[in-house]
Image 1 (cartoon, helix red, strand yellow):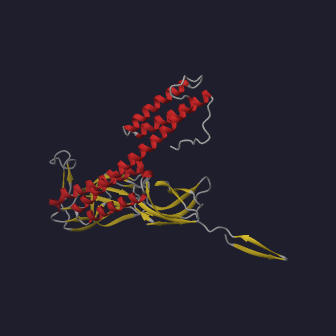
Image 2 (cartoon, helix red, strand yellow):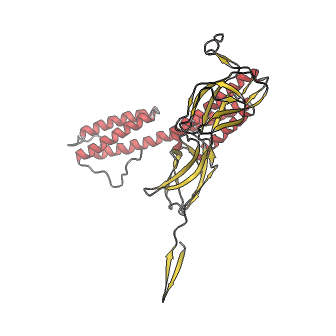
Image 3 (spheres, rainbow, N blue to C red):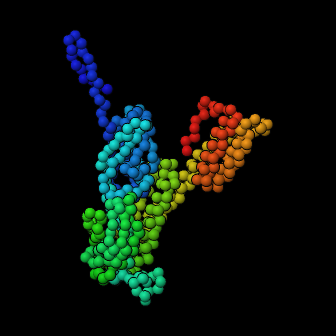
Length: 389
């Protein structure tokens, strides 16, 4: 700690300077607000050897806790968004214990991303079985696209038929953007033939008009490539969906670097899609899904081990109340028997990988253990710690 010195008659009195303010750097400090999107954090000036909880506005991160070193430094580490974020600037909150959290205002900016499936077409006016009775139910021809988006202004409203491809209008339902900035999947139909070339996608985005340059490409050969386009788009959508599900299921249990690598791979697949390299995009998306399958097995094994440890702790607790084979205790015997039955059900659920069910059963068994201890007048051992679910 640095000191200032005040000189009085016959004495020098040091006055402590305040500690420097905490700093936090985000790389990158912008994104599209999608679940699974990775950000690298590094910082200084936090409590020493502390556990930090990171939240970007209302969105938790995975992992949700990080640790500082003895100097209060947060080494470079990746976190992934565990919930979507709406467009705009967002504060990053860093909580360390029960004290006032550190707040870094406007530290992260979310910019909208809208995607078209397919991003390329043959220029024929679009029609579906709903707009043309000559088309079989469920069918479509020409430029019929699926629109998705993230990072938009929360709770915004896009009126029906207000989206344009270049200067050409489209037909679509009204779109309500969620409070998380996510646009629900929407079908849009381009009603006019378009000559070959690249076209901007233009749509209202709250108080502003959003223009996504060269978002749609019309090419004469596109009709023969439609199958590959849609196959690649489906593979990429599946990869994105599985990333989101994995983060929700077990983001806490995965190295953040693994999640960051998945996000980079998915972005590369998107870049290949935009460039018209559909086979490359599909191959990259499949590689992401292969990695996700391996990581899902890792998460499953970790959750299984964690729940087995909880079960062992509860078993030990029941044994302190009533050791196996001993006569029933004067009090607590009924609770012990009921608790051991719950444990048996929980262990079967753990083996079957029904983890949410197992967790609920373990919690019920733990409550019965507390009740049995109270009824039998047995105190928990001093070294016993409460289970941290």
